[in-house]
Length: 316
Image (cartoon, rainbow, N blue to C red; front, top):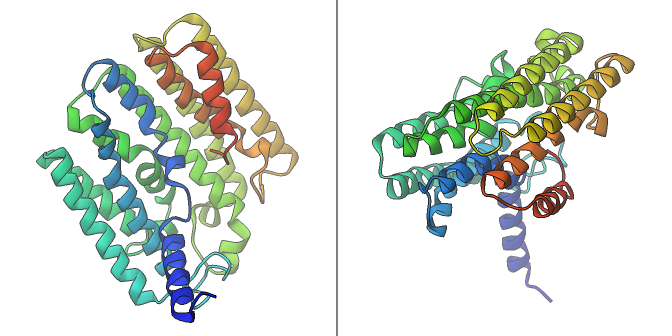
Protein backbone atom coordinates (compact mmCIF):
# COMPACT_ATOMS: atom_id res chain seq x y z
CA UNK A 1 0.00 0.00 0.00
CA UNK A 2 1.40 3.43 -1.02
CA UNK A 3 1.71 5.90 1.90
CA UNK A 4 -0.55 8.97 1.75
CA UNK A 5 2.42 11.35 1.54
CA UNK A 6 3.80 9.41 -1.43
CA UNK A 7 0.43 9.44 -3.20
CA UNK A 8 0.15 13.19 -2.66
CA UNK A 9 3.65 13.69 -4.06
CA UNK A 10 2.78 11.63 -7.14
CA UNK A 11 -0.45 13.57 -7.61
CA UNK A 12 1.38 16.87 -7.24
CA UNK A 13 4.01 15.85 -9.81
CA UNK A 14 1.31 14.65 -12.20
CA UNK A 15 -0.64 17.90 -11.96
CA UNK A 16 2.47 20.01 -12.39
CA UNK A 17 3.39 17.94 -15.43
CA UNK A 18 -0.14 18.28 -16.82
CA UNK A 19 -0.03 22.05 -16.43
CA UNK A 20 3.29 22.18 -18.31
CA UNK A 21 2.33 19.75 -21.01
CA UNK A 22 -1.27 20.26 -21.99
CA UNK A 23 -0.27 19.24 -25.51
CA UNK A 24 2.55 16.96 -26.72
CA UNK A 25 5.55 19.09 -27.66
CA UNK A 26 6.39 16.86 -30.60
CA UNK A 27 3.17 17.97 -32.24
CA UNK A 28 4.44 21.54 -32.39
CA UNK A 29 8.16 20.94 -32.80
CA UNK A 30 7.53 18.79 -35.88
CA UNK A 31 7.89 22.06 -37.83
CA UNK A 32 11.61 21.96 -37.01
CA UNK A 33 12.02 18.77 -39.04
CA UNK A 34 12.16 20.05 -42.65
CA UNK A 35 14.52 22.88 -41.71
CA UNK A 36 16.74 20.54 -39.72
CA UNK A 37 16.78 18.16 -42.70
CA UNK A 38 18.10 20.90 -44.98
CA UNK A 39 20.77 21.84 -42.42
CA UNK A 40 21.80 18.19 -42.17
CA UNK A 41 21.87 17.86 -45.96
CA UNK A 42 24.26 20.80 -46.25
CA UNK A 43 26.49 19.66 -43.37
CA UNK A 44 25.50 22.38 -40.91
CA UNK A 45 24.37 19.67 -38.52
CA UNK A 46 26.46 16.51 -38.29
CA UNK A 47 25.96 15.15 -34.78
CA UNK A 48 23.18 13.68 -32.68
CA UNK A 49 24.19 16.20 -30.02
CA UNK A 50 22.52 18.78 -32.24
CA UNK A 51 19.20 17.39 -31.04
CA UNK A 52 19.92 19.23 -27.80
CA UNK A 53 19.05 22.42 -29.68
CA UNK A 54 15.41 21.45 -29.21
CA UNK A 55 15.54 21.46 -25.39
CA UNK A 56 15.24 25.23 -24.83
CA UNK A 57 12.03 25.26 -26.87
CA UNK A 58 10.59 22.40 -24.83
CA UNK A 59 11.26 24.34 -21.63
CA UNK A 60 9.88 27.56 -23.13
CA UNK A 61 6.70 25.70 -24.05
CA UNK A 62 6.52 24.19 -20.56
CA UNK A 63 6.75 27.70 -19.09
CA UNK A 64 4.16 29.04 -21.53
CA UNK A 65 1.66 26.26 -20.96
CA UNK A 66 2.08 26.40 -17.18
CA UNK A 67 1.58 30.16 -17.16
CA UNK A 68 -1.49 29.68 -19.34
CA UNK A 69 -2.80 27.24 -16.72
CA UNK A 70 -2.33 29.96 -14.08
CA UNK A 71 -3.95 32.72 -16.12
CA UNK A 72 -6.92 30.62 -17.25
CA UNK A 73 -7.69 29.04 -13.87
CA UNK A 74 -10.77 31.21 -13.33
CA UNK A 75 -12.39 30.38 -16.66
CA UNK A 76 -11.16 26.88 -17.53
CA UNK A 77 -13.43 23.88 -16.90
CA UNK A 78 -12.16 21.92 -13.90
CA UNK A 79 -11.33 18.86 -15.99
CA UNK A 80 -8.83 20.95 -18.00
CA UNK A 81 -7.07 22.81 -15.22
CA UNK A 82 -5.48 21.35 -12.05
CA UNK A 83 -5.50 24.78 -10.38
CA UNK A 84 -9.26 25.07 -10.94
CA UNK A 85 -9.67 21.66 -9.28
CA UNK A 86 -7.58 22.74 -6.30
CA UNK A 87 -4.97 20.06 -6.98
CA UNK A 88 -2.14 22.49 -7.78
CA UNK A 89 -1.39 25.73 -5.97
CA UNK A 90 -1.14 28.83 -8.12
CA UNK A 91 2.04 29.90 -6.32
CA UNK A 92 3.70 26.58 -7.05
CA UNK A 93 2.79 26.83 -10.73
CA UNK A 94 4.24 30.35 -10.91
CA UNK A 95 7.50 29.14 -9.38
CA UNK A 96 7.61 26.38 -11.99
CA UNK A 97 7.20 29.01 -14.73
CA UNK A 98 10.24 30.86 -13.40
CA UNK A 99 12.32 27.66 -13.19
CA UNK A 100 11.38 26.57 -16.73
CA UNK A 101 12.06 30.04 -18.15
CA UNK A 102 15.45 30.48 -16.48
CA UNK A 103 16.52 26.96 -17.45
CA UNK A 104 15.48 27.60 -21.06
CA UNK A 105 17.54 30.80 -21.27
CA UNK A 106 20.57 29.12 -19.68
CA UNK A 107 20.36 26.25 -22.18
CA UNK A 108 20.15 28.67 -25.10
CA UNK A 109 23.32 30.39 -23.96
CA UNK A 110 25.16 27.10 -23.37
CA UNK A 111 24.02 25.30 -26.53
CA UNK A 112 23.88 28.10 -29.12
CA UNK A 113 26.52 30.51 -27.75
CA UNK A 114 25.17 33.37 -29.83
CA UNK A 115 23.97 36.78 -28.68
CA UNK A 116 21.67 37.01 -31.69
CA UNK A 117 20.00 33.70 -30.88
CA UNK A 118 19.77 34.64 -27.20
CA UNK A 119 18.07 37.92 -28.08
CA UNK A 120 15.60 36.22 -30.42
CA UNK A 121 14.89 33.55 -27.84
CA UNK A 122 14.19 36.14 -25.12
CA UNK A 123 11.64 37.78 -27.44
CA UNK A 124 10.18 34.33 -28.15
CA UNK A 125 9.97 33.55 -24.43
CA UNK A 126 8.31 36.89 -23.61
CA UNK A 127 5.74 36.41 -26.38
CA UNK A 128 4.93 33.00 -24.91
CA UNK A 129 4.18 34.56 -21.52
CA UNK A 130 2.51 37.68 -22.93
CA UNK A 131 0.15 35.44 -24.89
CA UNK A 132 -1.54 34.42 -21.63
CA UNK A 133 -0.78 37.35 -19.33
CA UNK A 134 1.94 39.79 -18.24
CA UNK A 135 -0.71 42.50 -18.39
CA UNK A 136 -0.86 42.11 -22.18
CA UNK A 137 -2.71 38.82 -22.81
CA UNK A 138 -2.54 38.56 -26.58
CA UNK A 139 -4.89 35.60 -26.20
CA UNK A 140 -7.78 38.04 -25.93
CA UNK A 141 -6.95 40.25 -28.88
CA UNK A 142 -7.03 40.34 -32.64
CA UNK A 143 -3.31 39.44 -32.63
CA UNK A 144 -3.82 36.14 -30.78
CA UNK A 145 -3.61 33.86 -33.80
CA UNK A 146 -0.48 35.54 -35.16
CA UNK A 147 1.34 35.29 -31.83
CA UNK A 148 0.18 31.68 -31.32
CA UNK A 149 1.34 30.65 -34.80
CA UNK A 150 4.77 32.07 -34.02
CA UNK A 151 5.32 30.71 -30.49
CA UNK A 152 3.78 27.29 -31.16
CA UNK A 153 4.84 26.52 -34.70
CA UNK A 154 7.25 28.80 -36.55
CA UNK A 155 9.33 30.56 -33.90
CA UNK A 156 11.62 27.57 -33.21
CA UNK A 157 12.59 26.95 -36.87
CA UNK A 158 13.15 30.69 -37.41
CA UNK A 159 15.52 30.82 -34.44
CA UNK A 160 17.24 27.62 -35.62
CA UNK A 161 17.91 29.12 -39.06
CA UNK A 162 19.18 32.31 -37.40
CA UNK A 163 21.63 30.26 -35.34
CA UNK A 164 23.29 29.05 -38.54
CA UNK A 165 22.61 32.25 -40.48
CA UNK A 166 21.25 30.00 -43.21
CA UNK A 167 18.50 31.60 -45.27
CA UNK A 168 17.48 30.49 -48.74
CA UNK A 169 14.48 31.35 -50.89
CA UNK A 170 13.12 27.86 -50.28
CA UNK A 171 13.34 28.04 -46.50
CA UNK A 172 12.07 31.61 -46.17
CA UNK A 173 9.06 30.82 -48.38
CA UNK A 174 8.44 27.55 -46.55
CA UNK A 175 8.62 29.23 -43.14
CA UNK A 176 6.27 32.00 -44.30
CA UNK A 177 3.85 29.46 -45.74
CA UNK A 178 3.78 27.42 -42.54
CA UNK A 179 3.27 30.60 -40.53
CA UNK A 180 0.20 31.48 -42.62
CA UNK A 181 -1.23 27.96 -42.44
CA UNK A 182 -0.89 27.84 -38.67
CA UNK A 183 -2.45 31.27 -38.27
CA UNK A 184 -5.44 29.59 -39.88
CA UNK A 185 -5.08 26.67 -37.50
CA UNK A 186 -5.23 28.96 -34.47
CA UNK A 187 -8.21 30.85 -35.93
CA UNK A 188 -10.02 27.53 -36.26
CA UNK A 189 -9.58 26.84 -32.55
CA UNK A 190 -11.10 30.19 -31.62
CA UNK A 191 -14.09 29.42 -33.86
CA UNK A 192 -14.59 26.00 -32.25
CA UNK A 193 -14.38 27.49 -28.75
CA UNK A 194 -16.41 30.60 -29.65
CA UNK A 195 -19.52 29.77 -27.62
CA UNK A 196 -17.60 28.82 -24.47
CA UNK A 197 -15.34 31.88 -24.75
CA UNK A 198 -18.33 34.15 -25.26
CA UNK A 199 -20.04 32.61 -22.24
CA UNK A 200 -17.07 33.52 -20.05
CA UNK A 201 -16.73 36.99 -21.60
CA UNK A 202 -13.40 36.26 -23.31
CA UNK A 203 -12.56 38.50 -26.28
CA UNK A 204 -10.89 35.94 -28.52
CA UNK A 205 -10.37 36.28 -32.27
CA UNK A 206 -13.66 34.61 -33.23
CA UNK A 207 -15.64 36.40 -30.51
CA UNK A 208 -14.35 39.76 -31.77
CA UNK A 209 -14.90 39.11 -35.49
CA UNK A 210 -17.65 36.50 -35.42
CA UNK A 211 -17.61 32.87 -36.55
CA UNK A 212 -18.25 33.36 -40.25
CA UNK A 213 -15.78 36.18 -40.79
CA UNK A 214 -13.14 34.34 -38.78
CA UNK A 215 -13.67 31.18 -40.82
CA UNK A 216 -13.32 33.14 -44.08
CA UNK A 217 -10.02 34.57 -42.83
CA UNK A 218 -8.91 31.03 -41.93
CA UNK A 219 -9.60 29.87 -45.49
CA UNK A 220 -7.72 32.86 -46.92
CA UNK A 221 -4.65 32.23 -44.75
CA UNK A 222 -4.71 28.56 -45.71
CA UNK A 223 -4.80 29.39 -49.41
CA UNK A 224 -2.01 31.95 -49.05
CA UNK A 225 0.09 29.55 -46.99
CA UNK A 226 -0.36 26.71 -49.48
CA UNK A 227 0.71 28.94 -52.37
CA UNK A 228 3.89 29.95 -50.53
CA UNK A 229 4.66 26.32 -49.65
CA UNK A 230 4.23 25.18 -53.26
CA UNK A 231 6.39 28.06 -54.53
CA UNK A 232 9.04 27.04 -51.99
CA UNK A 233 9.02 23.58 -53.56
CA UNK A 234 9.76 25.06 -56.97
CA UNK A 235 12.87 26.74 -55.52
CA UNK A 236 14.01 23.64 -53.65
CA UNK A 237 17.12 21.86 -54.87
CA UNK A 238 16.01 18.50 -53.47
CA UNK A 239 12.22 18.36 -53.83
CA UNK A 240 11.30 20.35 -56.93
CA UNK A 241 10.46 17.49 -59.27
CA UNK A 242 7.10 17.84 -61.01
CA UNK A 243 5.58 14.73 -59.42
CA UNK A 244 6.14 16.07 -55.90
CA UNK A 245 4.72 19.48 -56.80
CA UNK A 246 1.67 18.00 -58.56
CA UNK A 247 0.99 15.60 -55.68
CA UNK A 248 1.03 18.27 -52.99
CA UNK A 249 -0.86 20.74 -55.19
CA UNK A 250 -3.63 18.16 -55.53
CA UNK A 251 -3.52 17.24 -51.84
CA UNK A 252 -3.73 20.87 -50.70
CA UNK A 253 -6.49 21.71 -53.21
CA UNK A 254 -8.56 18.70 -52.15
CA UNK A 255 -8.07 19.45 -48.45
CA UNK A 256 -9.02 23.10 -48.74
CA UNK A 257 -11.99 22.46 -51.04
CA UNK A 258 -13.33 19.76 -48.71
CA UNK A 259 -13.01 22.02 -45.68
CA UNK A 260 -14.66 24.99 -47.42
CA UNK A 261 -17.59 22.88 -48.64
CA UNK A 262 -18.05 21.38 -45.18
CA UNK A 263 -17.88 24.84 -43.63
CA UNK A 264 -20.59 26.09 -46.00
CA UNK A 265 -22.75 23.11 -45.12
CA UNK A 266 -22.59 23.71 -41.35
CA UNK A 267 -22.81 27.50 -41.53
CA UNK A 268 -19.10 28.24 -40.96
CA UNK A 269 -19.22 27.46 -37.27
CA UNK A 270 -17.65 24.08 -36.37
CA UNK A 271 -17.96 23.14 -32.72
CA UNK A 272 -15.40 20.35 -32.72
CA UNK A 273 -12.42 19.01 -34.64
CA UNK A 274 -13.78 16.66 -37.29
CA UNK A 275 -11.85 15.14 -40.17
CA UNK A 276 -13.32 17.72 -42.56
CA UNK A 277 -12.22 20.60 -40.34
CA UNK A 278 -8.72 19.29 -39.66
CA UNK A 279 -7.90 17.90 -43.11
CA UNK A 280 -5.85 20.93 -44.26
CA UNK A 281 -3.65 20.69 -41.17
CA UNK A 282 -3.24 16.95 -41.50
CA UNK A 283 -2.17 17.54 -45.11
CA UNK A 284 0.34 20.13 -43.91
CA UNK A 285 1.75 17.62 -41.45
CA UNK A 286 2.11 15.08 -44.27
CA UNK A 287 4.00 17.68 -46.30
CA UNK A 288 6.30 18.62 -43.40
CA UNK A 289 7.32 15.01 -42.81
CA UNK A 290 7.57 14.05 -46.49
CA UNK A 291 9.59 17.15 -47.42
CA UNK A 292 12.15 16.46 -44.69
CA UNK A 293 12.48 12.82 -45.69
CA UNK A 294 12.82 13.70 -49.38
CA UNK A 295 15.61 16.15 -48.55
CA UNK A 296 17.36 13.37 -46.61
CA UNK A 297 17.01 11.02 -49.62
CA UNK A 298 14.74 8.51 -47.93
CA UNK A 299 13.07 5.95 -50.17
CA UNK A 300 9.41 6.38 -51.16
CA UNK A 301 8.38 3.30 -49.16
CA UNK A 302 10.05 4.56 -46.01
CA UNK A 303 8.50 8.01 -46.47
CA UNK A 304 5.07 6.38 -46.70
CA UNK A 305 5.71 4.33 -43.56
CA UNK A 306 6.91 7.29 -41.49
CA UNK A 307 3.98 9.48 -42.58
CA UNK A 308 1.56 6.69 -41.76
CA UNK A 309 3.18 6.19 -38.36
CA UNK A 310 2.88 9.87 -37.47
CA UNK A 311 -0.72 10.02 -38.63
CA UNK A 312 -1.60 7.30 -36.12
CA UNK A 313 -1.16 10.04 -33.54
CA UNK A 314 -3.62 12.86 -33.00
CA UNK A 315 -3.49 15.61 -35.59
CA UNK A 316 -2.02 18.01 -36.58
